[in-house]
Image 1 (cartoon, one colour):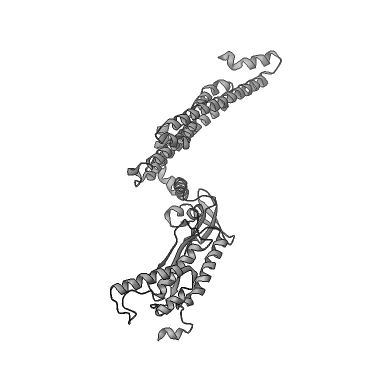
Image 2: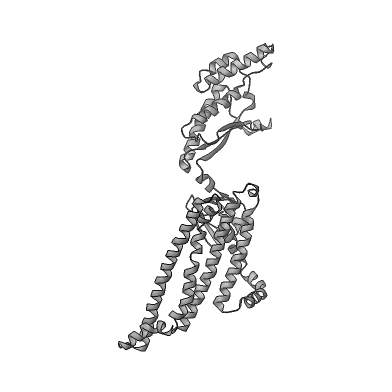
Length: 415
């Protein structure tokens, strides 16, 4: 083995190199050879393991192996052998450089801990994805269990890494850390809160850079441009910057618009307030007049025939309009608004479209449109919504309805 360690060194010495230069050249040459074999081994083993798992997953009836491949479990496991190879041969490569050997060995051991955590994380993510496909586990808080386990795993991993770097035994390191924990918590309270919040935000995928969030408490309404241990920076739509403590994301309520941006449409949810006094039954003459409106011609014809048949069969006295079944102007208007909304070119036809009457208030009867625009861009979305309501507001008088407005003279309210 000594001959292997120093064969380049011996060769250089015989060709007139100094002892120091020969040692450095010997070390660098062996290090390059080691790196080459490590990367080559990693490439070959990764290809073999990933190919085997992929082939097995394609033949298997279970979807668990597919989820393992999707979460890169085989790829992460493949890194173990090249890492062990590096740990085994680094002492031989750096035999004449004890200080460098110590640093690199510690670095590789710390990387081993990180790799182990990464493998555990990918396996847990695969298990989480698999459990969510099982019907009886869909309503169980699987994410919470995985998160708690991972938090403990990261804590143990971090402590193990610190123990390796400091050269202290793991048990002694934990004991000393426990004694100083009260002081650490007091001094680094905000940092610890931010750290815990960062983990939870990351694990729960609550916020990403580029997300549009609204956080009323801090006056934030814009795009997230930076997330770090202690703060989250939001660029508002007026180009101002709002800084939010990271732990506020888990302690307070905020709105993330990512779901809307990822969906196929952006929701429109707005109401008109109809004056109560303007609501009434429709006479036959008024129904005939409204049949001229193309969007509701068929609807009025069908409904009028149904109502007349019912009233005739039940011998209803129609000298009083209240008797029997009747059409109302607000009901026909609601149907018109629904037909108009459904046929609007900017409305997403595959998502919910609804026009509903809400509970009457002192401000009238709210008639709400609930639909989704195809275009999610803010400027275009506002234009689409305004275009729809421009038309609807202008159509209200045709149905002998009125939009509720507060009196301009305040004394009227006192009468």
